[in-house]
Length: 577
Image 1: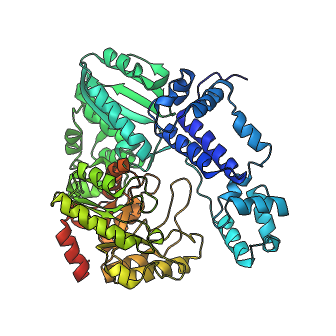
Image 2 (image 1 turned 120 degrees about the vertical axis):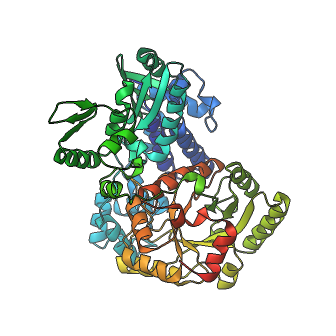
Image 3 (image 1 turned 60 degrees about the vertical axis):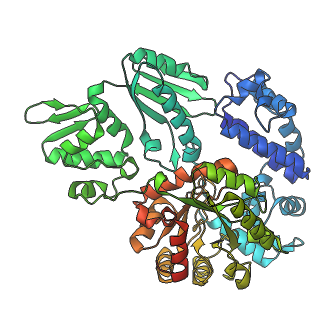
């Protein structure tokens, strides 16, 4: 049956991810799996409707999309089905995909469970574990059963239906705002809503504008090349959907109430309700169109947010803080912090290369860091891939590269070590002591009990060689919940040892969360904002990490890498928090 609408990029990407997972269960070769997963990523990141490109036989212009994949996209766009998925589904139960992703299992074990125990779903997996049948399968045992049951008994991190990661939406909305600003009819244009507050996930993307000719700006908006569907088109408002399923609302408003509408469409519901309730006590009624003086009926309108907040008795509140978490009281009594800015950050202290699981070489990542304007960058490849002299080899390459750079950028010889189940690290003290910078992170065993996970982190914090704990709670937004930690104990130990905690800027991590970043700052823990970049373009994600730090009320003084490297090195030597 033919489709009536084209699938958004997110749906196409999910189809190719499913195809790759099913084929992995079917034993397909790694090259084929990588091709489908790379295509899924490229489709998800594309700002244009890839289904339309495929129908026009233009999708192969995108990197990672060959003619075979283009034909599959066109097939799915036309019929709503993909025969390649149907064929492998006939051999492999789709429920095995979820079984495969249970920690400690994987595709081979999932297939074995299917053949030996007829397990084809998480429900059947749980039943097999509860009846102690998993331990009867070769290679498994009672401990595996315990881990499976512990994982399945925890609350699941459900995908955030209808919401997109900030990292996916923000570059898109920023480009739309810039494009609208270039239109001759545009006067003022700003993002609004949850994306302006830099929430970790966003739904519809709001843009507020003023214009000399509102109709012309609206017409230009609905005609932009990436628009896949026009949902509504009026004289001052339009709603469109992009090729990858993102919804955009543009409102063109009168200049004299631009500040009122921008504030209204930026603040969270809780922030706006608290603002209005406080205004009522002062005889004022706040709406998106103005502030009414109740006694006289006079309506005051404001061209800027600053004017509006000033009338209500507040300093202007940065958008990231508008969540009703104490910002109104702080804005009234003059104690709002001066939040860290992207321009304050001098370097990136967590970057990967092809020495481990990065996609670009040492020189490519360093050139990209230089292009970002950094003064230093720490290369932190995974220690487990740096044995047999590879760590020393990389350090020699870094030294030679620093000599060629002549001081334009300092490349630090770092490493990211695993915090093992017993709290030990996967490099010797002697090897760690030779590094400029050491990140320590948990990469397995997320489903352990709270006391055991806390003990692992505390042990790493005790190490005199560990400078920073990477992605401290291990969460993957919409996919994996943070593991359970005694946060107070971790923060107290970090203060005691002078060890830093990371705000990891990967779009699906943003770990520490905003609330934990604030707790760290209030406890006196210094925070590192870094990208954990595995590709050159991911260095730009630093803005996401800074936004998360801002949502955590952090100042430049609380962020380690707003300092020059010699000062940071002094902190490491003295271990002063």
